Amino acid sequence: MTVETAKPRASEGATAAGRPKRAQLSEGAKAERRLGWLLCAPAVIVMVAVTAYPIAYAIYLSLERYDLRFPQDAKFIGFDNYGAVLSSPYWWSALTRTLIITVVSVVIELVLGMLLALLMHRTLFGRGSVRTSILVPYGIVTVVAAFSWQYAWTPGIGYLASLLGPNSAPLTHQVQAIAIIILAEVWKTTPFMALLLMAGLALVPDDLLKAASMDGATAWQRFTKVMLPVMKPAILVALLFRTLDAFRVFDNIFVLTKGANDTSSVSMQTYNNLIKGLNLGIGSTMSVLIFIAVAIIAFIFIKLFGASAPGSDSGGRR
Image (cartoon, rainbow, N blue to C red; front, top):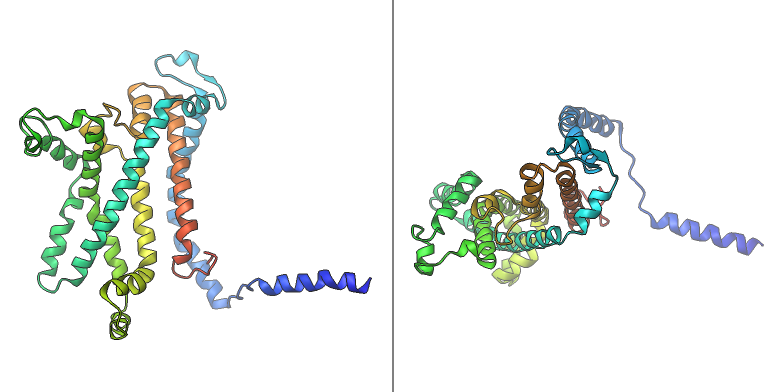
């Protein structure tokens, strides 16, 4: 009996010993934490007040059959709207196109953004002029930039459309139109990616790079073994922001194709149902699904790369 009762105690001791003990905060640290919460409280209260009601109302409308053309037929139907949207091939086609645009554009922006960040970081002469010229596309309003791309690809008058031939109309073909949408996204937002990555490059100590160079490390080895590990927090922020923004792409598609020829995204589908179709039930359901998808993407990013954030332990916890 003594041996049997000792085993669980030993295992409990090992389990307790295996868990890292949370460090006790001093009174000064506790006061500093309370001050931090107090300073953040006004902004948090304003954000909750501004966003909580629209989100709650959208969820409520998603549970109703509510068409503004027939307001007298409004009725609570539960999750029937979700079943209708999730069983629709139009929704899944739009989601597939959205994911393609998101993945391709973010990958290209990460590569080009890293190259531009290295260029801006290492420029010795005319650094201000170089950085300003690179950031010009990001300073242009997205709708204005989209109209310029539309003009460039308009048959007969666009200088880019003329390169493909006098009768070319790339915006009327699905694959070509999606490629142009991705191109417009990359041109507009790559400077934003470069700006965030350049902030990460500033975290890399020059002494560390010099030590690696003296040890015989090549430029590629210094980049992959020294710079990238230090830049992980900045890369996480850049990828997270751009992925969430690219997944909600709307303005470029609205201006360039208006969703024609199977080029609409989930945001475009939501606009067509909510604003043009006046179907508040289905439109709100799509809005809630987009919100859930964005939350899932953010959760995946934080779970995969959260351990690289400053102040995190090996498990990604602070």
